[in-house]
Length: 207
Image (cartoon, rainbow, N blue to C red):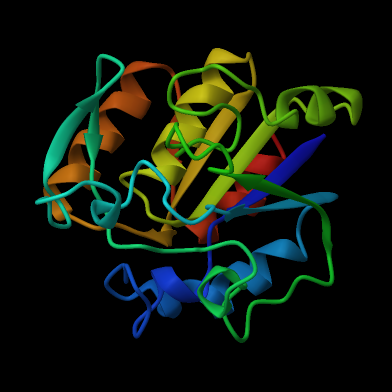
C-alpha cells in the first residue's frame, strides 16, 4: 500500500506566519486533490513548547537564522514558531484533513529540534510513524508539504533509511531556499528516492 505524508502545512509556515515559506499556501489545493488518490493519509505538525532550543529568542544575543552548536550538532535558529496550542501551529485554512487518519506531532522535546516525521534531529526518539506505517502494510510513501528543503527532505531521507520507497512530489512542496531545494533533490536521488510531478502519480502507482 502507498501512503501520502502531508508535512507541516501550518499557519506559521504560510504567508503571514512567523516563519513563512515562499508560496507555502499555493500548494494547498493540489495537496487536497492528492489526498483523494491514497488509501492512507498522514499529516505532520511542528509542535514546539515555549523556549524551544531552535528559537533564536532562547539564546541571548542571537537572532533568527544564526547558527550555533547544540550537543555537537549544528542548529539553525528560527523565529518562534508553531507553539503548542497556538494559531500558528494550526493547519492552514483550506487544508482538508477529512482523509487524514493520523497526525504526527514533532519537535515536542524542548532540547532537540525535529525536522523529520520519523525521528528528532539527534535520533533520540522515534515518533512511531515507521511502526505505524509498517503495521498498516505501507511499502511506499509519497511526500509533500513544507518546507521542501527541511522537513519534507529529512522525512524523505528517513523513509528511505527505514526501507520504504519514497517519492518526493515536486510541485506539491515549497522550499525556503532554491539552493537548499536543489541540494535536497540531489541527496534524495543519491539515496534511491524518486522525484516526480503530481500528474505522473497515477502512472507511477500502477507500477
